[in-house]
Image (cartoon, rainbow, N blue to C red; front, side, top):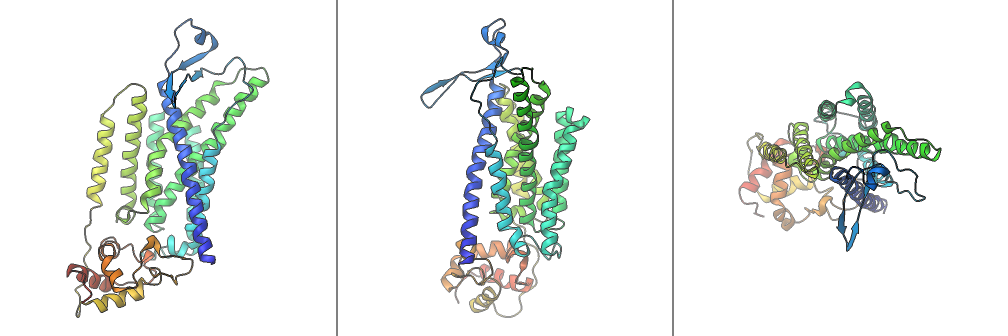
Length: 399
């Protein structure tokens, strides 16, 4: 029952995380589009006299909308003012809770790979937590430094540091855990941008107006810069959220480079849309993104590492014995592995038919990527992997 409750808690947190993330990223896409699509009012018009810097007309859901943006602030604040913050906070809180439940509480299985580094649970969790907190402090310091006044150079340096982070995490953690902690670091930066910069700046602008003063434009400029940064972070983060389903990426010998290659493609594609919203069709950016993704697809294509020659006959009973010893504690209808209430991905390997049915999946995970058993916690040998490879090559029968 405890394992089931643990699994159900993970389900609910994952659901909440996706819902909040959709709301936050949707708001980011919308407001960047809105900001880039505004047309300046005609000189001398009523909108220009009111301090409006841009407006647009839109139709949606059977109605017409006319959003306007003020250069600094309107002459007076309305009674009702909408804030956009809980989407960000809920996404980060639910994501961090999910990180704790899925990874930190099962660090020896989900984070530690003895072939990479023999870490204790506290060491693995400490590295993960440190990467999240440290990334924010470094990023924030860069934004507040003189470099922060040069967006292009700042973006290049931040991307370089995230590449260094991805490489560093892969020196200590398993590939899947390294990926998810790069995502957690980026997500922490994004949420902290909202909590420590964007919302406090907006509160200061509101406070100044309610005190009868004129808001300092610097708060708006800082908030806009961090919002744009968050917008460019979105596609890499979304990829990381789904990457744990694709072991060809996080299981690659140079998984950190694959990650940053795909992240660069996401940034390039996002830049195309941001330019397009300004009326500039810069097709070179999606072309660059497509080239980078094609390169990632080629680079992650299966290339089998050498396996030792098989000694003795290759038959089903031999394969079944290996799977029973190395895999069945997780992939049984009722797993015996601590913390599992159901077999991962719903894959069961307890009958001959189940083994034959999943032969290609077993081959991919055990022989090609070697990501299973996870962290090789059951000590599957290369000789055993060679037997499985030979069995699949011979047709994966029950003979």
